[in-house]
Picture 1: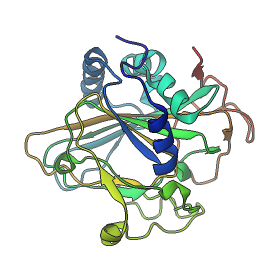
Picture 2: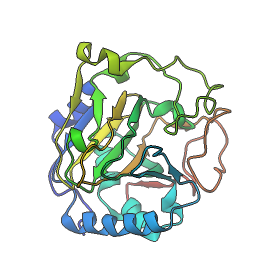
Picture 3: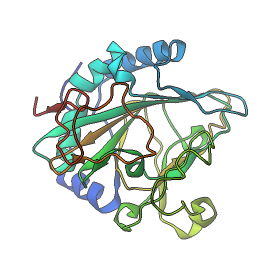
Length: 271
């Protein structure tokens, strides 16, 4: 398995990430990493971690497993040894990179539940601008099979939207600050919404404040397995808010305002 990206990341791609809030990067992970993660996914589906959630209510299966790297050796190996940390450092233009947490998303064929429009940042106990997600697909993905959609430039709107529950729990985040998420689905024709057809091993890298979501998986024969890892750079500090859900199995040991360097949020770049 290659520990460095297989393809170079250009300055233009870095600039696009900061301007658009998202970039689709192709050819950065080799087939060994994809197969490794597919095996880890199957193990997790059979034995989900302690923070796993099942979101599907209308048939199919939509699993979200949070923080599982702490108890799943296969996921930990990807976090610590894959090209992901180096990719994050390059995109964030950061001297150091800390690992925030991970989320495994599996949306099986025939799963109607959409991933609601949201920003990532308001869910997380951190403050700063150098924060991104690497959403690595383990399957070929189209919009029909629940490919991700993004609103270009939305990370630069200066807006913070209150988190929404993927399970539809309207009470879950009611005490957190921020505006209610507008009905972006009804507004989509007026907005710069983008998506990409992707091959297994391609990844989407998006800023923590970029608005995004995904439809259900309306195919009858294609899975949508994705592994999202979250990374932070030089300017990020710990900033928990009352009412946020846990993103790590073990509680953080650092205090508000401190850098993330800790066992729970390890510094993984430079290696």
